[in-house]
Length: 180
Image (cartoon, rainbow, N blue to C red):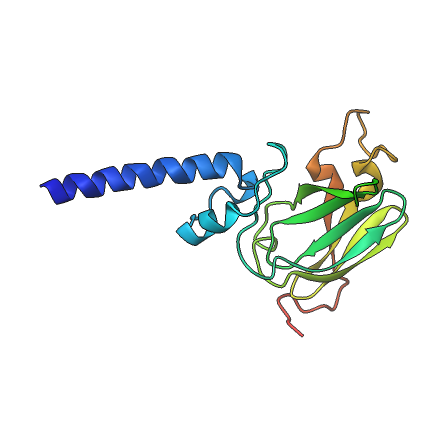
């Protein structure tokens, strides 16, 4: 009976710790994933610089390749296993520079839940393109709209993430699900 109470207390403590961890450290897009003790321990070494930078991203092979956008000084990571594009906004200051991290969610589809989705990125005409690896689409991110250089929204309001990220279908003749 005391063992059962100890386990219940342990389970309750663990639930509170993981909830606190998710609220302060984990990108909200990943909040449905289970949290392991090792993840929480590692996160202590990398505290967010502010509450708006809750960008701990679990897993391996999150991003494979990227692209630099000279006009905004950003480096964009192309999602492989990740569920978002990562944007590293760099600044050059006298103290060696800094970096603000932003997560740009992918549309929620079965394709964006997969692995090895896109590999490498190319910038053209204010858009970032992700080259498909195992994805059946080309990733397109409107970086000009992200930073207010283009307003692609029809109603004149600020663009939503849905306006920023699109999946462009591959041409006819591509065999869906084909991995090279």
